[in-house]
Structure formats: C-alpha cells, structure tokens
Length: 152
Ligand SMILES: CC(C)(COP(=O)(O)OP(=O)(O)OC[C@H]1O[C@@H](n2cnc3c(N)ncnc32)[C@H](O)[C@@H]1OP(=O)(O)O)[C@@H](O)C(=O)NCCC(=O)NCCS
Image (cartoon, rainbow, N blue to C red; front, side, top):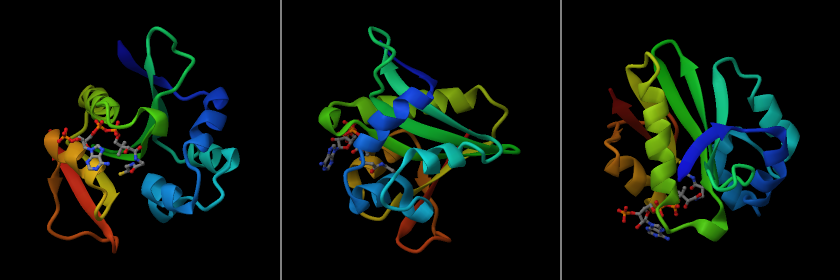
C-alpha cells in the first residue's frame, strides 16, 4: 500500500537522481532551485519556516522513495511544491496517488486552501491537479506558470 513519510537525508541522492538536467529541474521546482541540483539546496529549503518535505513509499519497503513533494504552511494557507515521481515509475497512477495523499494530509491541518504553481503545458501534472479539484486561477503572478488552488 502506498503511504507518505517524512523525507530523510538518505532520500536525497535518489531524489537528485530523478532530475537529470536543467529542463527536468525547471519542471520540478520552477526557478526556485538552480542547476545542478544538490543536497544543500534541498536541505536549505527545509529551513523555510513551515515547509515540510515528504516522500511517497510503498509499505512493503519504506526505505525506497517513489515520489516527493513538500508542503509549505503559512497561517491557514498551504502550498504544495517540488512534486515529482521516480521517472522509472511514471504513467502508472503514482503521481495521482501522491497528490491525493498530500491533499488528505493537508485536510487534517487547519487550512482553508492549498495552492500550487505549475509550468504551462505540464499536462500530466495539470491533469492530476484538475482531477483532484484544483481550479486554475484567472491570473498568475508568475509568468509561464499557472496558479491553481484547492479550497477546502
Ligand atoms: C507530473 C508527474 C508527477 C506525474 O506523475 P505520474 O506518476 O506519471 O502521474 P499519473 O500516472 O498519475 O498520471 C497523471 C495523469 O497524467 C496523464 N499522463 C501521464 N503521462 C502523460 C504524458 N506523457 N502525456 C500526457 N499525459 C500524461 C495520465 O493519463 C493521468 O491523467 P488521467 O488521470 O486524466 O488519465 C510526473 O510526470 C513527474 O514527476 N514529472 C516531472 C516533475 C513535474 O513535472 N512535477 C510537477 C510539478 S507542478
């Protein structure tokens, strides 16, 4: 069964291995992280107050991450970011399950809305978010990226 656990330092090499080039990094993190991705940038991001990184695992082997995201909680708003699935396991529903579990996690917090940014044209990601009830905002403050929100 798929489940979430907190990201550990030992997950970082696997996660970095899922981001083979600058284009993949841009899909993963937008302009927030710079190529080449390294453990320091990911650890530094953890210092942002309210930001918690998670990984998706199968409970048959919880040491092996299958996907990743983080949740940044500010007051009654949360943002989901750094969503990624192991490239070897894409197209089998893991991304959908990862975001569904993330939404369940946020639902358990005292949060009114969950927002995110997605690069324009990132069809698999947009299909996941739309299918789970995220609505695209009419305007986005970030050029080339759509802002989407799920209101609880
Ligand atoms: C986006 C991502 C997480 C999706 O993970 P995944 O495990 O492949 O997702 P799923 O298998 O659950 O598929 C999600 C949807 O995308 C569709 N899809 C999958 N691959 C696709 C492709 N290459 N082209 C178009 N649609 C595709 C699926 O059919 C599904 O849509 P549906 O439920 O309407 O049928 C994964 O592609 C990824 O890690 N991408 C790189 C990082 C990234 O883009 N992150 C998003 C940041 S906002």
